[in-house]
Image 1 (cartoon, rainbow, N blue to C red):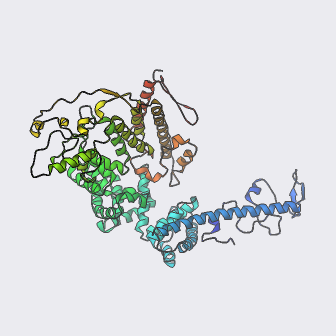
Image 2 (tube, rainbow, N blue to C red):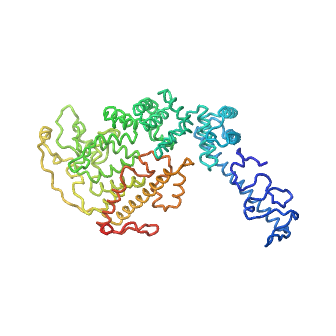
Length: 637
């Protein structure tokens, strides 16, 4: 009988070639069967001589020496010890996960009780698999009454001890333990655990982004039905269930039903975000951050329907909760473009885009960096409200009002312009008029742009590599990228109109002439290195597409894209780094599983990178193996 260590059967973690029971050779006193490895070598059990070994030839046998017997026994002991060590490492890993979950308050029972439960659940699982003779249902179910009895025996809670504890620990192990974790998750769902149901259907929803038929699987019939039954309870149920039900309904073409679910989810989601903060959602559960912000889905759906008032209300909810995506969407709603299709920033746009970028929205980082290199003085389109003047952006003097402390306003404006104090809260868009004039120099604004590009590039957002490279390749910059001296010093010469009446009437003085200045950070070598990354990204896109196309042609047995993980293990770093390490993030703006926004056509991006190589006369080679990435003049041939 094999001893159990820490709580799990030894056999569940032992390799198939390791004996259960005494490890003996066929000629030893203990008897038993020969190891599979030796059997494959053609070793046959002698009939008469128990201490013989075969020499060259069919029937040539000689007596085994005591030294050889000793070496054999030592080898068997080491092999058994290695298997026990592997088993112990697995069990210790499971126990560590449970102890960590207990530390964060996710368990109601002790880790030891859960470990003991897992031992008996393994027996229940094996019995269930054998009794159903390999039927389809056997893969995902165990008798629910027996599961409940076992759960109650150890006093475990379905949502906390089972889902947050046992299942989370099992799913981080090898394939057999992951299968046990899956069976346990389905058993908890059958027993009424809403957390288990949520996790099953969320995993299916993420998979369905690549394979839509997953949601119609008969295996998910029970969890799918339970999810929508829970969602029908409205705001009385968990808001994540409502959000997920809306996402699934939307994917099935039931948009009206999805909106109803998301409306019900708003109350709970707002309350949770106000208590924990919107940015803490991914920290609590990295597999389901999309379920913590139903206002994003609600706003997107209303925008698709051109219900702008309802969309604005949903966006405002997210902005009030400092949700990065909502701030980004709010910035887009305030976007204006000039005749050259260049974004002309307003105070609303800059405020929301800065909030989104500061909260980690990668596309916002890219757009904000682009603002610093494409918006010339005056950087903001809208006029400063009179109550905020004086500021560097004033286009006409404020009306004189004896009821105001104009001296104090002037002093605060000057101190703000010099960077000593902010006269308004940074949480207000009014603060933009006191901060948008910084940096004041051409070099300062270029460096600010590069800092935002670098943060976006750290997240491997491919378009940022191209624009950052162009910053380094630009030899001359227009002088009006900097703040004029009269605006910095708040002199009257900064006004373009003498009064609001003249301003409204279009009476404006001519702006000062613009001249070219040398780019202080011109650096083709850095640009070349950044352009090279676009070619690595292109290789990643092509590889990912090939893997997905291959997966669509075959029947998948495993739940995770292990075939692609095996491919990634052979990749060099410069290509592999473009992929997400966690495939649960496939839903986030990227159907390709890449780190950058898949809505950006990589072919267009690659063409622009090739254009730069042609203009500069560059041949690009891989930094790792020296392979040719691009040779200038290739298009002509």
